[in-house]
Length: 586
Image (cartoon, one colour):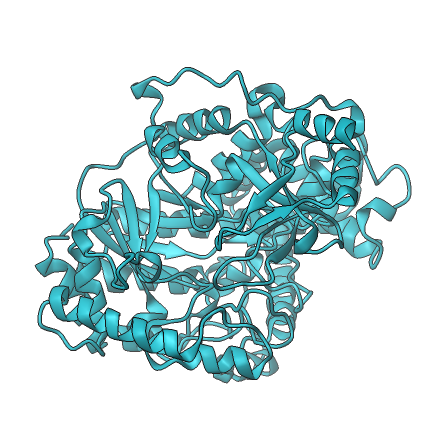
């Protein structure tokens, strides 16, 4: 056992951990054995965490223009509008930018836009991507494609039905959109202008082998379903570029996949340009998921760098007492450094391509990731170390090249010195008001927040303002058998503490109005304050309840207010006014 522990240490596997309650958990022997088998594969060498790069102030990440600004965060799929097909799209995003920029918003925050599995309604989480290098085609505004000829009467009726639903029917949306996109592609092939054809060719050339692999994977995935790629026949488990090039040229569907990615990329670029023209200093603020589906395109395309037989997650915490198994494959801690972190750089460039700011989900994973053998569960996990500062150097480098601010979502069990190191490299910390609590039982005053930070009330995994202040989230979790991690009595105390905070720093607004929360966030020194559109429009249910699948309609609930109604929405105007009074003007 001692020899195994010593070997585990060389590979960066920690023997145990303290959870947020201070309890020590020793890692089970079987977990160490199985993680060692995963890490040692393919001739890997133990991760080198000692030889970190020398820090220099000019290697720091891009810091923006110095202004204190605010933005509006939205689950893009959840937008209602009079013209979408039951799922928010890039046309809606453009209109949201046009609505909020005149109010002083500097940024629109978005859920991960990564490519998913569009035909699989059960894999709708934006945090369980098929590929982080490419985009979710359900966000395409099909009617904006020049070669699209329009919907049939039956399709128009279906689009109207989908718009009227309160929960997104992903399967039906995918069927409608993919059929319409297929017709648009046929029209493009038959009669696109020379300019359009040239732009498509330029996109394919620019995206290179990564796009080739993604297109081929998507076609193979459908052909060989339901088998996952590790069970595909040779040579498709590990194909070379030549075989893939031949496959692409001989399969019409590969060109269709590339066409959809081109359309999605150009529509997102148009949203970025609209934000720039309207003077939004940040523009799009996008989220980077922490890992990938181990049976998806990225895991297949980059098999050397991805640890596909381990799952990332989190140990027990206040809101998730049983811990979490996210079911996501992480980077291999040793192979990630290959070719000057080529895979990481490619990922960062894809994410920052149209963004003025990026949030790295679970940034703690840059230093150590809580991993468990596939199927073992969160109670059988261990922390595994990564080359922390070397990865920060790469992130800072790509941030400067793209002129893109980087925010690290540093919530959870934070190692000693982590935040200081992260912020030294120029990554901003992520401060959630619900977690900013003092030892005396009060919420922290706004002036205690750091400057190099994003300040917000909650996250997509936490209750909305209305849900929290009414205790709706506690009742919901109890009803579906999920431990809320908090008693009703404790919530009553903290509700009083929040009302006291809002009474002191809310600018005289009622503690029942979310604009008072905006005033508190606006009063912080933090460079960027973000508010969720869910909170602005008084939504009751949170987008996601961690640890649930069928028990709760995660990632499916639409906003109660339409995009057209936002322009005259009183609470949105009140939120904008609160930020203006706090001096957050673009």
